[in-house]
Length: 118
Image 1 (tube, rainbow, N blue to C red):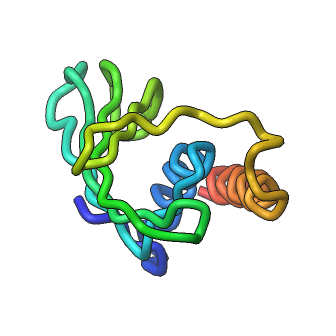
Image 2 (image 1 turned 120 degrees about the horizontal axis):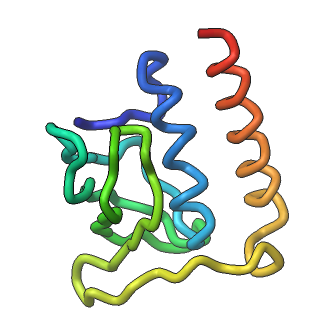
């Protein structure tokens, strides 16, 4: 499934995944693709995205999760540079641009509000 930034029907999914990328210094460019799970429990979800790295340059990345129980079960995500297979680690909050830390907080607040309204 392709998750697009500006699609109102996919806003919840976008907000769930955005912090996963941003905590690694990455920001998806407009959309990303997530595959699986089709049956539960599934082995994992996986996907690919083009991401800005600290808004300086872009990388094609691939990612996968640990075992999951639903499409909303996003945990233990590993993100890799597609070309070099180098893993992007989770960064400490003080290594992220201040506005990114705020954007992560805003995304979590908006996600909570969306979930309360449904």
